[in-house]
Length: 125
Image (cartoon, rainbow, N blue to C red; front, side, top):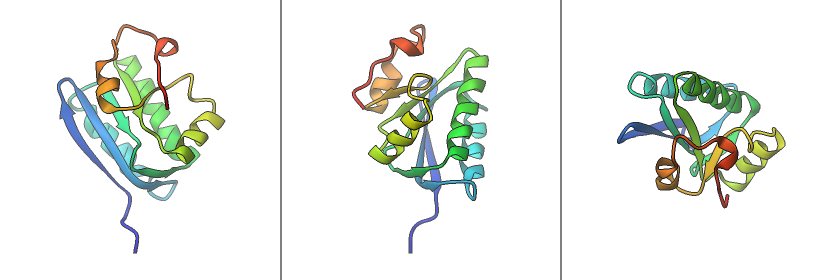
């Protein structure tokens, strides 16, 4: 039996790193939304580590985009880390690669200067 989708998180300096684990679709998108809302209680700097996310549907990506917009409205940011090939493909197909900053590691995402625009962000993903 497969584990249920869940999100782990930890505080790293001024940012919160969220790690969605498993498949996220319409049936469990609230888990992702609740984790992001919880993160906003302490910061507007969010890293989403997708290295253990095996699937995201458009609804789950919509939550990530909404979180990114909310962070930006609060003078913060959202950065994606290490999406698996199939998740990366969905991000590309939806045209979000130019909107959401993507990085290879959490450390790279955290080290990136907040003052640089999304278009300036580099990734080898």
